[in-house]
Length: 173
Image 1: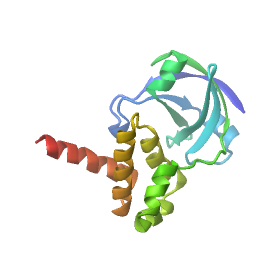
Image 2: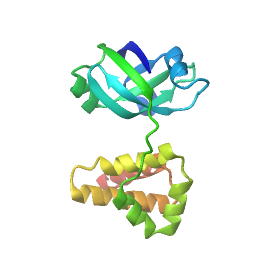
Image 3: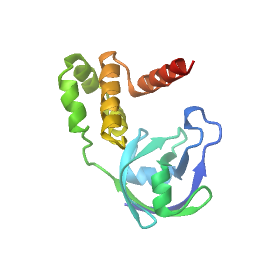
């Protein structure tokens, strides 16, 4: 386990990361967690007194990593950009499983399921989180349909998201 204090930062103009709030994880701390690792990995522990699990650390290329902080997490810890946060982190080895209803629908589309299973676990998790993030049953069903259709077309999550965004633009005129 590593313990340190960091400041909540926010990307200004960083392409698709624009507006993200995040914490920088220094290379020394990341190396203590996963020696020699330069790829993203998941951690658990706490931010101040708020328990976390399954949080991704993303490499920044200079040895440092970042941890994106959602609005829900910032609200839970009661902090935003510029605030200091105490971190206690360890590697999270828990297996991430996609939602059962998504897997059931993919089972009806063998080619979509086959493509889904070729994706790295972290990429499969993007689809799972998209489905889990739905607040209503109709939205969840719509999101599952989006995923199955995209995977049948061999689209990764980013391609699906861009396609859905373009579809919305086209419908708006």
